[in-house]
Length: 89
Image (cartoon, rainbow, N blue to C red):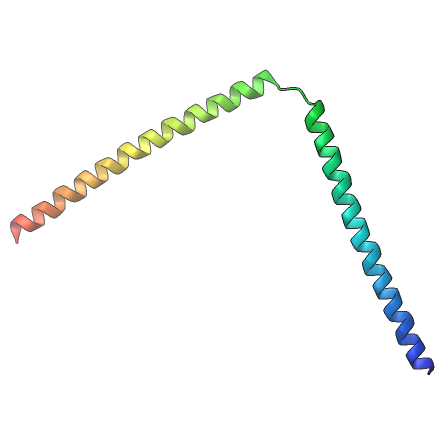
């Protein structure tokens, strides 16, 4: 009987520890979420940051156009090489 009581106490201890830990994680999640929402509402838009983001968007778009040009050139070269092989064969 005393061995069974020790196992029950240990099980209750482990279970309560897990529940306290889970409660702490849930509390931290909701506290952080509400704090983040509050900070998002109170922050003002920084004009310098918006200008930087716009410049980055322009750079990304220009890079995408240049990559498309490079890929068109590669497709053209591949087509010319494949036609050359067909003519030689």
